[in-house]
Length: 617
Image (tube, rainbow, N blue to C red; front, side, top):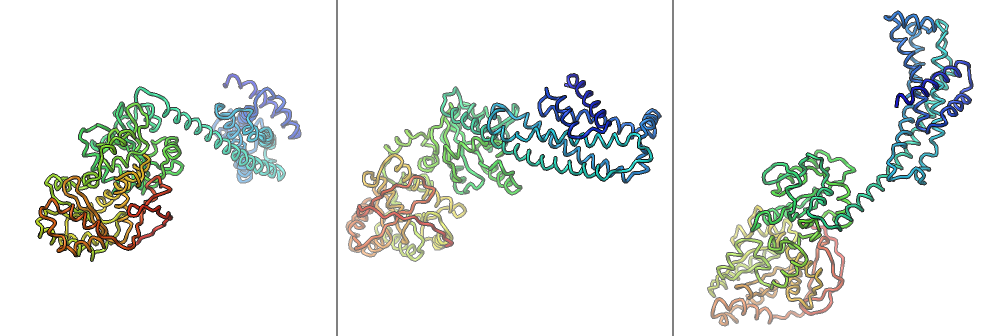
């Protein structure tokens, strides 16, 4: 490069000295230099002229700095009759500060022009409208760059031969300031155009990257490595994932040819979801049947503050599975893909990738909540197969919630799940129920499951039930997690059935789920009873108390503990209230909301409302 440009630089240096020294008019000299450099691009014109001036400027300062200690420099300064700067230090400093400011403005504009030249042509063509619009003022900018350089050169040439008679010129100083201001404004305008062009290129780049990712997910692969490496950006020797069990970093290759469940969430991952998923993950019958990988979704446009960094590290340290080592390693294109294709929107989701990197299920969390690891490999076909095998019984309703329920089923006990937040009803119901069970010698186990979205009122009920020994409760420390799990399973069952085209009118399990969800939407208490697997009954608070209060009228029918649930079911069915008001409340994040739902009690189409709730308890 230097060999190629040495001659034109020297030629322009001499031309500047000759024409400026001869008192040439600045505009004419600038046009003359542009004609000399007509074979070069606009960026090269600016760079060569700047380099040419730099030669003269550098020679001047070499002589000035060495004249005190170097005889040769002193003699050259004397021959050029350059004034002693120390004698007129203040005036000279002002003059050279103005030159430095102008040169800085020249250099800023030159750098921006070069950046236009270096833009990637695969994303923006030189003849494209965007490029033409952005670069239309570059020729004018180069002209004023040369004018600025000529003004600086004139000041240097005026010092030669001035000796002790050096007098600063007001017009000269004003010109330096004026040119610096003009170039500064040009710099701002060109930078603005460059930013717009870079934004355009970024959009083109992101579109290409996004299209590549879309095509990659559609294509067939021999393993899952290409997909995982597109999702997670990592260097050649980088270990981008963290093993939460062994507390070490690993390469992506540890996930090769494995079912990978991508846990996609932001940093506000609900603790109850995390805790329950943790429990299910640890219950895998065969370890490494699948692996979970947490993908934290964080806006890359904003750097994480210390609070977010701490939040991320705390979440990562609480997970036994793999996590991306830092949110910045998640490809922004993958984040866009998750939002646009997988419809990620704050709520956590579990995307299943098979060993070849194909998406087997966009969100397996509902399957995970309902069947845990039994749902592996979490495909829609597997989901439909599990529903075909399922019946409405205590195992489907609650056996994965608490291990005690499994033991009670094995021991052939009568099980009662009850809920609500009316503590007076709870006291009356549990006390009456225990007395009846004792009288009939029915081995009864009762457990309180609260309400969905449990608040302080439910917690207070839980504490009172525990203190007064009214029934079993979930572990106090994890109470919210267990209650949340019970109700999110029911909501997941509802969603799953809806997505497979099943309705309340035609599907027995959906009718039962519907009834349970309407119980939760009411202000009353409620209870479900089960003996064995298939004998089940249920009722709302007012109906149950009516039946229990009339115990003396039907106790003779229960001549064996096994008959308690069937007799109770018949008595509950025999109570007909004049009016009923069933409410089905589906959380906004449940997913698909059906247009039409019929009441399981009377078969009429239910009215549909939108509800916004702020419950401070």
